[in-house]
Amino acid sequence: MGRAVRATPGPREATGSTRGSAGSAGPRRLPETAAVLEIRRAVRAWAGEYLAANAAVAVGLSGGADSLALTAAAVVEIGDVDALIVDHRLQDGSAQVAADAAAAALALGCRSARVLAVDVGTEGGLEAAARTARYLALDAARDGAPVLLGHTLDDQAETVLLGLARGSGGRSIQGMAAYAEPWGRPLLGIRRATTRQMCADLGRTPHEDPHNLSPEFTRVRLRTEALPLLEDVLGGGVAPALARTAEQLREDGALLDVLADELLEAARVPGAAGDEVALSIETLATAPAALRRRAIRSWLLESGAKALTDRHLRAVDALVTAWRGQGGVAVGGGSPDTRLVAAREHGRLTLRGYDRCPRE
Image 1 (cartoon, one colour):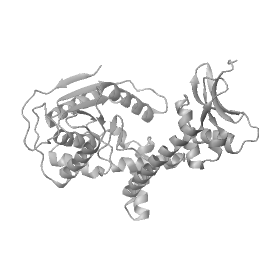
Image 2 (cartoon, one colour):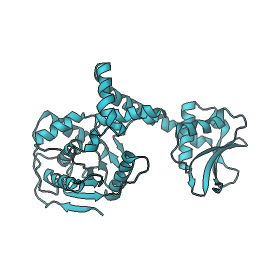
Image 3 (cartoon, helix red, strand yellow):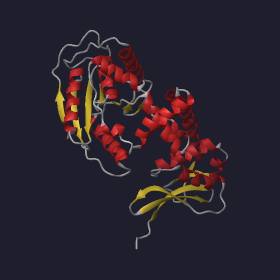
């Protein structure tokens, strides 16, 4: 359960947005500096494209510069904003940091602020486990509203570089989408320096998370070592170029996904068991590789496969295009007692669960 704080209803400043009615008495006038106006325009554009009129939003607020700037702009441009503050409880004093962020949210005009204390596991390392706990908590607390996140252009560039390192295809370097329900990211075109400047313009001191400077985290090293080096070697402009690449790949990927869905529907055939959905080898084999692998990926995921890697996908694809009598391909998913295996059977690509061998 989170700790909720709600602002006292009051009048809304005339300088605010016309998108909805405000429910808090916090200050609404923001200084018209270059940073403030740039971030307000970004939030306004995002809301105009993705948000219904008079809809409320939640904002994932850490107390850092990016989320503080986003919150201030969202209150003015959108209106009804609820702040959700996740306390990971990984550092001494984290409860006070969360409480300070909640107070800042109300001062900025949010209609409520709620602190969500979470337990962070260990799976995938601390960075991944904290992210998982954070998103689960935000999703559970959003009450059906979209959740705005303060990811910036710099975060996008880091995400693209991480995707390149994984080498798992174009999908992994498409970066973060401006809206992938329920997550909204209005600041993907805004530099991190701009959010910090906006906080300075508002007279607010953002929280500096020590983890953001810890070299034990891959993303921190990208931010503090790899990207500055690339900027120096390539003469600047690297982060915007990476972000543009991600945007172009998302546009291309959206079209390919539509075409792959059409291929998948055309390839569906009844399985041998009658209650399973298989795919026609002939239909898949005659399709372009990019569409075929996308269709296979979608089919595997909808059939219960999990944590698909490029190696899994190419091995299943080889059952279609390079079959020499090889056996089935085990993919992640199934249950504790069964494993999923993709196989080629009588001109069909099938996916079935098989009992796992008992451990000795």
